[in-house]
Length: 256
Image 1 (cartoon, helix red, strand yellow):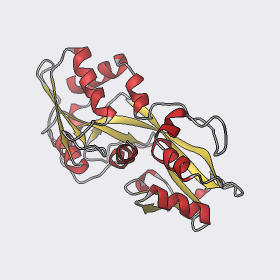
Image 2: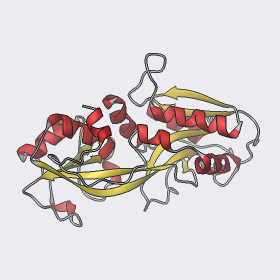
Image 3: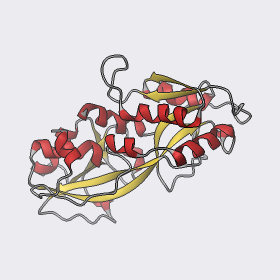
Image 4: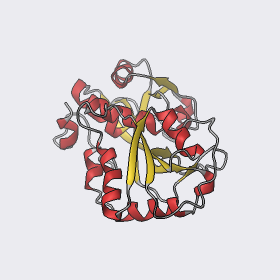
Protein backbone atom coordinates (compact mmCIF):
# COMPACT_ATOMS: atom_id res chain seq x y z
CA UNK A 1 0.00 0.00 0.00
CA UNK A 2 2.90 2.36 0.79
CA UNK A 3 4.23 1.85 -2.76
CA UNK A 4 0.79 2.62 -4.17
CA UNK A 5 0.58 5.87 -2.21
CA UNK A 6 4.04 6.85 -3.43
CA UNK A 7 3.16 6.30 -7.07
CA UNK A 8 -0.09 8.21 -6.67
CA UNK A 9 1.77 11.47 -6.13
CA UNK A 10 4.36 10.75 -8.77
CA UNK A 11 1.70 10.47 -11.46
CA UNK A 12 -0.29 13.46 -10.23
CA UNK A 13 2.26 15.94 -11.58
CA UNK A 14 1.73 17.26 -15.07
CA UNK A 15 3.73 16.45 -18.19
CA UNK A 16 3.61 18.42 -21.43
CA UNK A 17 3.94 18.07 -25.22
CA UNK A 18 0.51 16.69 -26.08
CA UNK A 19 -2.01 17.86 -28.66
CA UNK A 20 -5.76 18.17 -28.08
CA UNK A 21 -8.86 17.65 -30.21
CA UNK A 22 -12.50 18.65 -29.99
CA UNK A 23 -14.64 17.05 -27.30
CA UNK A 24 -16.92 19.99 -26.71
CA UNK A 25 -19.94 18.42 -28.39
CA UNK A 26 -19.79 15.06 -26.61
CA UNK A 27 -23.08 13.15 -26.35
CA UNK A 28 -24.17 13.45 -22.71
CA UNK A 29 -25.60 9.91 -22.63
CA UNK A 30 -22.95 7.80 -24.36
CA UNK A 31 -20.53 5.57 -22.43
CA UNK A 32 -17.44 7.41 -21.23
CA UNK A 33 -13.85 6.26 -21.57
CA UNK A 34 -11.76 7.27 -18.57
CA UNK A 35 -8.03 6.68 -18.29
CA UNK A 36 -6.43 6.22 -14.87
CA UNK A 37 -2.64 5.91 -14.65
CA UNK A 38 -0.89 3.17 -12.77
CA UNK A 39 -0.47 4.27 -9.15
CA UNK A 40 1.81 1.60 -7.76
CA UNK A 41 -0.82 -1.09 -8.27
CA UNK A 42 -0.90 -3.78 -10.95
CA UNK A 43 -4.42 -4.30 -12.36
CA UNK A 44 -5.38 -7.96 -12.17
CA UNK A 45 -2.58 -8.69 -9.70
CA UNK A 46 -3.92 -7.70 -6.32
CA UNK A 47 -5.99 -4.80 -4.96
CA UNK A 48 -6.39 -1.71 -7.11
CA UNK A 49 -5.59 1.73 -5.80
CA UNK A 50 -8.59 3.24 -3.93
CA UNK A 51 -8.85 6.12 -6.42
CA UNK A 52 -9.81 3.69 -9.19
CA UNK A 53 -12.88 2.84 -7.15
CA UNK A 54 -13.79 6.54 -7.13
CA UNK A 55 -14.45 6.40 -10.88
CA UNK A 56 -16.56 3.25 -10.47
CA UNK A 57 -18.55 5.06 -7.80
CA UNK A 58 -19.22 7.89 -10.25
CA UNK A 59 -20.62 5.38 -12.73
CA UNK A 60 -22.86 3.73 -10.16
CA UNK A 61 -24.22 6.95 -8.72
CA UNK A 62 -24.82 8.64 -12.07
CA UNK A 63 -26.10 5.59 -13.95
CA UNK A 64 -23.64 6.47 -16.72
CA UNK A 65 -21.59 3.66 -18.21
CA UNK A 66 -17.86 4.27 -17.76
CA UNK A 67 -15.06 2.18 -19.20
CA UNK A 68 -11.87 2.46 -17.15
CA UNK A 69 -8.54 1.82 -18.84
CA UNK A 70 -5.15 1.84 -17.11
CA UNK A 71 -1.96 3.11 -18.70
CA UNK A 72 1.38 4.64 -17.71
CA UNK A 73 0.99 8.27 -16.69
CA UNK A 74 2.27 10.01 -19.82
CA UNK A 75 0.17 7.89 -22.17
CA UNK A 76 -2.92 8.32 -19.99
CA UNK A 77 -2.53 12.09 -20.02
CA UNK A 78 -1.93 12.15 -23.77
CA UNK A 79 -5.10 10.15 -24.42
CA UNK A 80 -7.24 12.68 -22.56
CA UNK A 81 -5.51 15.67 -24.13
CA UNK A 82 -5.94 14.30 -27.65
CA UNK A 83 -9.55 13.18 -27.26
CA UNK A 84 -8.80 9.45 -27.40
CA UNK A 85 -10.26 9.29 -23.88
CA UNK A 86 -12.89 11.52 -22.29
CA UNK A 87 -10.77 12.40 -19.29
CA UNK A 88 -7.71 11.46 -17.25
CA UNK A 89 -7.93 11.21 -13.47
CA UNK A 90 -6.25 12.54 -11.29
CA UNK A 91 -3.78 15.48 -11.68
CA UNK A 92 -2.41 18.12 -9.28
CA UNK A 93 -3.09 21.75 -10.19
CA UNK A 94 -1.27 24.70 -8.70
CA UNK A 95 -3.94 27.18 -7.64
CA UNK A 96 -1.96 30.01 -9.25
CA UNK A 97 -1.74 28.25 -12.62
CA UNK A 98 -4.20 29.25 -15.34
CA UNK A 99 -3.64 26.17 -17.50
CA UNK A 100 -3.97 28.16 -20.73
CA UNK A 101 -0.38 27.46 -21.74
CA UNK A 102 -0.75 23.72 -21.23
CA UNK A 103 -1.72 21.31 -24.04
CA UNK A 104 -4.66 20.08 -21.96
CA UNK A 105 -7.37 21.53 -19.75
CA UNK A 106 -8.35 20.97 -16.13
CA UNK A 107 -11.85 20.08 -15.05
CA UNK A 108 -13.80 23.06 -13.74
CA UNK A 109 -14.32 21.38 -10.38
CA UNK A 110 -11.70 20.47 -7.81
CA UNK A 111 -12.04 16.76 -7.00
CA UNK A 112 -9.99 16.67 -3.81
CA UNK A 113 -6.95 18.23 -2.16
CA UNK A 114 -3.46 17.07 -1.19
CA UNK A 115 -1.27 18.48 1.58
CA UNK A 116 2.39 19.09 0.76
CA UNK A 117 4.60 19.18 3.84
CA UNK A 118 8.05 20.66 4.48
CA UNK A 119 10.27 18.24 6.42
CA UNK A 120 13.27 19.81 8.20
CA UNK A 121 15.60 19.09 11.12
CA UNK A 122 13.98 19.84 14.45
CA UNK A 123 16.65 22.31 15.53
CA UNK A 124 16.49 24.31 12.28
CA UNK A 125 13.84 26.86 11.31
CA UNK A 126 13.52 27.71 7.61
CA UNK A 127 11.91 30.92 6.35
CA UNK A 128 9.01 29.37 4.46
CA UNK A 129 8.50 32.62 2.54
CA UNK A 130 12.07 32.56 1.22
CA UNK A 131 12.75 28.91 0.48
CA UNK A 132 14.94 29.82 -2.49
CA UNK A 133 17.73 30.34 0.04
CA UNK A 134 17.92 26.67 1.06
CA UNK A 135 18.99 23.27 -0.25
CA UNK A 136 15.68 21.53 -0.90
CA UNK A 137 14.49 18.34 -2.56
CA UNK A 138 11.18 16.89 -3.68
CA UNK A 139 10.16 13.58 -5.18
CA UNK A 140 10.85 13.06 -8.89
CA UNK A 141 8.39 14.74 -11.27
CA UNK A 142 7.26 17.46 -8.85
CA UNK A 143 9.87 20.23 -9.23
CA UNK A 144 7.64 22.26 -11.56
CA UNK A 145 5.20 22.84 -8.70
CA UNK A 146 7.66 25.10 -6.89
CA UNK A 147 8.70 28.69 -7.73
CA UNK A 148 12.26 28.20 -6.44
CA UNK A 149 15.20 25.88 -7.22
CA UNK A 150 14.64 22.38 -5.89
CA UNK A 151 16.29 19.07 -6.73
CA UNK A 152 14.41 15.87 -7.49
CA UNK A 153 15.10 12.61 -5.68
CA UNK A 154 13.60 9.21 -6.39
CA UNK A 155 13.54 7.84 -2.86
CA UNK A 156 11.45 9.31 -0.07
CA UNK A 157 13.49 7.37 2.47
CA UNK A 158 16.72 8.67 0.97
CA UNK A 159 15.49 12.27 1.02
CA UNK A 160 14.36 12.08 4.64
CA UNK A 161 17.70 10.61 5.64
CA UNK A 162 19.46 13.46 3.83
CA UNK A 163 17.44 15.93 5.88
CA UNK A 164 18.23 14.07 9.09
CA UNK A 165 21.97 14.06 8.35
CA UNK A 166 22.06 17.71 7.24
CA UNK A 167 22.97 16.98 3.62
CA UNK A 168 19.92 19.02 2.57
CA UNK A 169 17.92 21.61 4.47
CA UNK A 170 14.45 20.29 3.69
CA UNK A 171 12.24 17.90 1.74
CA UNK A 172 8.81 18.86 0.38
CA UNK A 173 6.28 16.23 -0.58
CA UNK A 174 2.73 15.00 0.00
CA UNK A 175 2.04 13.98 3.59
CA UNK A 176 0.26 10.87 2.34
CA UNK A 177 3.45 9.66 0.68
CA UNK A 178 6.09 10.84 3.14
CA UNK A 179 4.45 10.59 6.58
CA UNK A 180 4.28 6.77 6.64
CA UNK A 181 7.95 6.58 5.60
CA UNK A 182 8.97 9.08 8.29
CA UNK A 183 7.08 7.11 10.92
CA UNK A 184 8.56 3.80 9.79
CA UNK A 185 12.11 5.18 9.84
CA UNK A 186 11.56 6.61 13.32
CA UNK A 187 13.53 9.78 12.56
CA UNK A 188 12.90 11.71 15.76
CA UNK A 189 15.08 14.62 14.64
CA UNK A 190 12.76 15.65 11.80
CA UNK A 191 9.85 18.06 12.18
CA UNK A 192 6.91 18.69 9.88
CA UNK A 193 5.11 21.86 8.79
CA UNK A 194 2.52 22.53 6.11
CA UNK A 195 3.94 23.97 2.90
CA UNK A 196 0.84 24.19 0.70
CA UNK A 197 -2.49 22.54 -0.08
CA UNK A 198 -2.85 21.62 -3.75
CA UNK A 199 -6.05 21.02 -5.69
CA UNK A 200 -6.51 17.86 -7.73
CA UNK A 201 -8.57 17.82 -10.93
CA UNK A 202 -9.41 15.61 -13.87
CA UNK A 203 -7.75 16.35 -17.23
CA UNK A 204 -9.84 17.13 -20.32
CA UNK A 205 -9.12 18.70 -23.68
CA UNK A 206 -9.29 22.48 -23.93
CA UNK A 207 -12.33 22.17 -26.20
CA UNK A 208 -14.19 20.11 -23.59
CA UNK A 209 -14.04 22.91 -21.02
CA UNK A 210 -17.57 23.84 -19.87
CA UNK A 211 -18.97 21.10 -22.12
CA UNK A 212 -20.94 17.93 -21.22
CA UNK A 213 -17.92 15.97 -19.99
CA UNK A 214 -16.75 18.81 -17.78
CA UNK A 215 -20.28 19.19 -16.43
CA UNK A 216 -20.50 15.46 -15.74
CA UNK A 217 -17.29 15.60 -13.69
CA UNK A 218 -18.63 18.58 -11.74
CA UNK A 219 -21.91 16.83 -10.92
CA UNK A 220 -20.52 13.44 -9.90
CA UNK A 221 -17.72 14.92 -7.80
CA UNK A 222 -20.22 17.09 -5.94
CA UNK A 223 -22.42 14.10 -5.10
CA UNK A 224 -19.79 11.44 -4.42
CA UNK A 225 -19.24 9.62 -1.14
CA UNK A 226 -15.90 11.09 -0.06
CA UNK A 227 -15.17 8.36 2.48
CA UNK A 228 -13.19 6.42 -0.09
CA UNK A 229 -10.75 9.32 -0.47
CA UNK A 230 -9.68 8.80 3.12
CA UNK A 231 -8.43 5.33 2.23
CA UNK A 232 -5.97 6.98 -0.15
CA UNK A 233 -5.02 9.47 2.59
CA UNK A 234 -6.11 12.45 0.49
CA UNK A 235 -8.76 15.16 0.92
CA UNK A 236 -7.87 15.36 4.60
CA UNK A 237 -7.13 18.43 6.75
CA UNK A 238 -3.48 18.89 7.63
CA UNK A 239 -2.68 17.50 11.08
CA UNK A 240 0.22 19.20 12.86
CA UNK A 241 1.68 16.17 14.62
CA UNK A 242 5.38 15.52 15.24
CA UNK A 243 7.45 12.40 15.76
CA UNK A 244 7.08 11.21 19.34
CA UNK A 245 3.58 12.63 19.74
CA UNK A 246 0.70 10.46 20.88
CA UNK A 247 -1.42 12.01 18.11
CA UNK A 248 0.20 10.32 15.11
CA UNK A 249 -2.74 9.43 12.80
CA UNK A 250 -3.79 5.79 12.73
CA UNK A 251 -3.52 5.63 8.93
CA UNK A 252 0.12 6.72 9.12
CA UNK A 253 0.88 4.05 11.70
CA UNK A 254 -1.04 1.43 9.72
CA UNK A 255 1.35 1.81 6.79
CA UNK A 256 4.31 0.80 8.92
